[in-house]
Length: 270
Length: 305
Image (cartoon, rainbow over all chains, first blue to last red; front, side):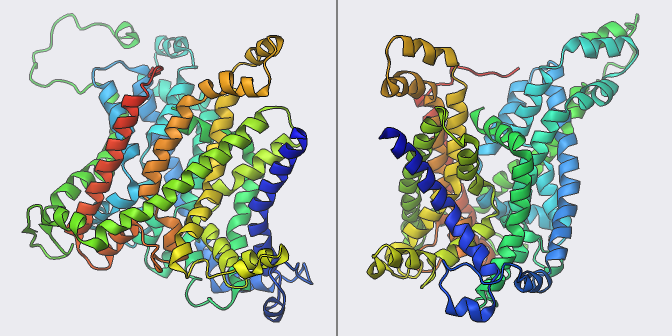
């Protein structure tokens, strides 16, 4: 009996998670006439009707959206890995008086609700002349956060200090130790941070919405959001575009599950 | 230490005592700290400054107005009422924690297709917020998925304007947010449960403990910290709800949250001073709640290297 209830609840929850997504997938394959005559729970007649995807792709300028997102992702992820590992290197391998204060600064910053401080952050980004350039998003994503620092520090403390010391005896300075010894060994931790931050940046809506107003700068979130007004009556196009945005996430999740679970749990339990 | 060993110690003190060298670690910390201070701490400081002024964000003149902006946030109904909308999300987050806890517990015991169920339950958390918004706009629209499902199970007369009716719109949005975030709480709880060593369960089995005893005396104490953390995140999260209502209803039909109101005040009505006062109030609330939590549940294992 309890076994039955257990599996019934699991299947029930899976249905609740999947049905809202599956019906959108149905709609994405329906023609306009078919969409208006069939109910949302009816599967499409033709599973190879990719017209809506083509319309959504071209009308939504999704290629541009993906390109802009990729550029922002590439630059800010590369930057944040260096910024984060350098900071973690200082905290993990040097002893200095203000270490707790520095960590405290990052910790408190994590509590500041980012959405509201944008009122003031906007003025700073504006004074730098970055509003309406991709650099606005890049500089805001570039910084590191307490979660990444913890992941890096935790991993770094598993690298024996004797490796550093051996390199120093061989004549390496501290920066060479970081670059030649620490950084190459950090690969798993870097992968975790890149995946977690990459997903967050891919999904970020508010910062691009606020700073990248011109349509040429649309990232995928804002490109999708633009469908809201003018396409109100064409749900099959919106559905296709929604699927275009969701599919990369599905692929990444299937390929990199382990890293994603690790990153998410490492983030919140500290 | 290693640096000192490797370098020949200067035998004579250099004759320039005024020019002290900056310790090397600050160079490694500099990029992170400069970004953090420029884009987090300076804005917070500015925000406090703006909140005592009337300013449109453009003109060079800022009129000092004292506490007027704060008085307005607390007395003008349009500003404090939006705080009450948080209650919907706050109540919903209890449901979220309960559902997540239930599934984390049952999946911590051996289950067929365990990884599949885990993946399905967690997956919504990874989805793009705008995509989630559209998926649920489609679900809630008249004659949409929800109405069709209700008709099939014979509750067709329960159909209503899920997002248009101010009485239910907030509940629909809060439910969307439960759908989106339950996976995160679930994976966190599951991770915490699995970090409890397996031998403890075996020992409990030998002592004749049943599943309920195992939950009550092994699992519950083991995940107390993460549950209390989840409640804090729930409170501060429900105060700062933005994406889902902004994308789905734009704050119409009584679904305007505090952050949407602050956004409109700042970027549509250009009242930077007033919006800053709202942001400062929210920030202080979040910090206060976190501080209370730290007081109630002291951190027993501070693990800074």
